[in-house]
View 1: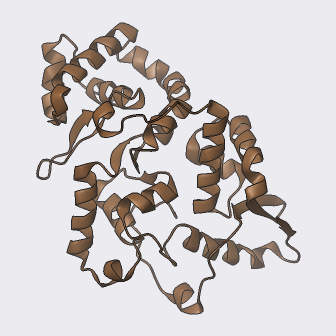
View 2 (view 1 turned 120 degrees about the vertical axis):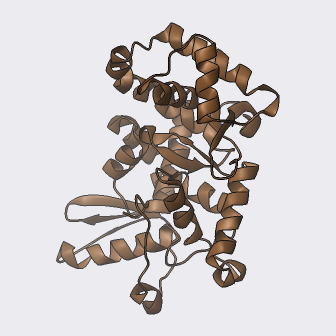
Length: 294
């Protein structure tokens, strides 16, 4: 479906912002569990752990969520992180994000090669080469076998025991490299400490791998249905995909989306957008740092 916008584009911009509130489940939340919500959004920025829990909590819907105390909502999200129904790990743009175990195995291959190419110079500066990464992956796999969940410090010790230096920024890059290559991901928190676990145990791949073009199309549909109205350039930035590939993914699913032109730019959104009440638009929402809406 497509419809053109006429008149002053500045008068349409507030409508776009309002519909994004609904698409992102801020003004019209309809998911009752963290896993359902994160699946709808594809990935949720989680650079700051507390801010990420805040972002999920304010988007949970249903009577039970509306009536729950802040502590109860946080406990619900903590359980989801502990049981692995949502996972905090590095994905798009090499940033911390929340994803579901069903999505992570097919999302990682979309971005890993491009992110590694961008990090190549930094890896050379840190004297991290293919042999070092292979040794690190093997050491991490040994430390986390049999379902073990280890802290960052414990994994650093395991790497040093295997002859892999971890000083300075090396440990962050070693762990991030292992995350982006599907070796490790977040484990169950140990008190206030985050842990890591093997990805194969927390998010096993189910079924045959998706073809790349099918995965890009699936990601595009997820993005525009949960972030729209948005542009192809917005999708390319958020996903970290090459602009041409992002546009190709959008082209594959645009028949399932609605489009409108504002200020010379084409904005895409889910074909069905929830209607937002005046009361919902008038309500102030306190968003956390790095929130997806921002």
